[in-house]
Length: 168
Image (cartoon, rainbow, N blue to C red; front, side):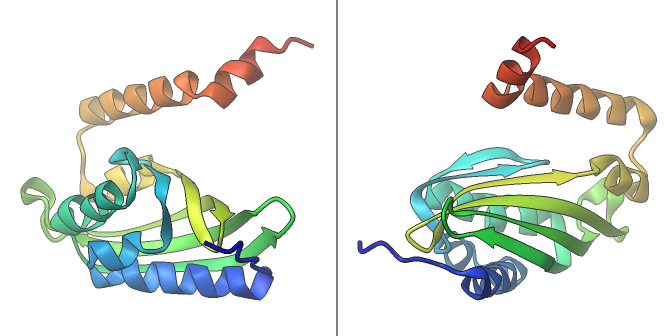
């Protein structure tokens, strides 16, 4: 594939198309915005690698658990030289998880994108999941278990290990 260079406006279009695809619930349409070897790091469902796995995460997991989904990206910034972009987002959904069915959730987050050949090769998000769990009515002891898992994920990341190894 020829190298496709994005600029800031192209990155904003990519994000608009990505979020519209996510809202549609069509996993294949959503995954088409990613490279074949992409990794999508979801704060609830964990990392998913490759288009088939990313499609399953969006359609088979997220849309199984959520209805009336909306996701909007704001203030996108993109560095064409590195292929790295960021955006702040708001999303909302209605839970379809039986014990939380009908709960209306709104969250905000920051997303980091690595773009290669016009497609996303790595996606990471930072979301305060505690805000979502409080809106769902998750019991505090369950929240503690989830927060422990998220802490383990953070501490195991290569970047975090390297960061913690450096001393002043």
